[in-house]
Image (cartoon, rainbow, N blue to C red; front, side):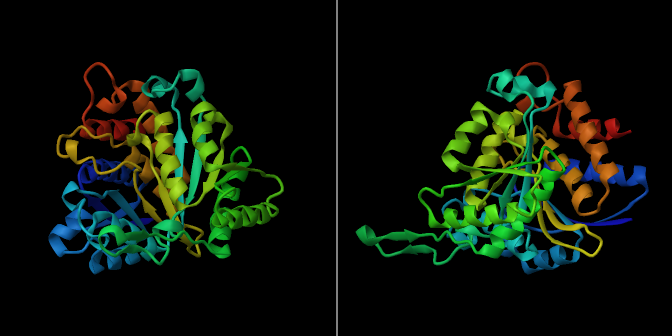
Length: 361
């Protein structure tokens, strides 16, 4: 089949890790006799530098025409004091909204070969295998009114956290089928003891759960969840939560995997008639400009995002499984970047990408 993919390298280490992800995608396509059609676009800080906006209209057009979008990272320190509409992160929010990708899946897995890479004790981390399902296009990141008004002592900032029943229902209907195919447990995370928004969240999730009687549902307050992720991560299978809570908790989950460079993500929207998802795929890590251009960034999160793309947007389960198996083989081999190798000579970004291709065969 033809794999029509938009590639957005973005900022900092984004182009480097994306290059290795594309290397693996091309290798898979050659092995399984698929055709890859790649287009490239601008998003984030590089887009501001070249076009004056973090999410150019041309990028929006290319994303709408592609079957899937692969993103590296966004963010540059030079824009830290810029107004919100001129910051690189505005481009990320923009493309998520334009594609309508409302469910973000972030798998967190502790590989046996990498237990020592986590700062937590091995017996706590071992066996961790969860997916954090984060609602992606609602909540406080998109709610209105928002902004900063006034001057001096009268300066005031406002952000609005808002959800509708349909928004909660649709992301819940992504989480429960995922659980059904795994260990059949969903933990819904909210702050219902304080927020009316969370009270609606809990009510709607409970109603959707009745459609999946074979899946166990429990509810957990977000502060307790943050603690339990460290104390007992094995208790979680599918973690379902709103936008801001999911953003924070999934980055905390990187501690369990040993490095934030390990975590892929898939942001899913509408399903096409074939059953495949509209998708935006990106590693969870940021742009890390301090190591950009040094060939030392961990590309496994980006490569894992390609595996997710093959599975969700192209329904190529065998190919996706081959990439995930190859990642695990490379981790066992010890040919990894410095973030996963506290001693000895680390591999370069490029060498890790080459090793994954070699492991695929």
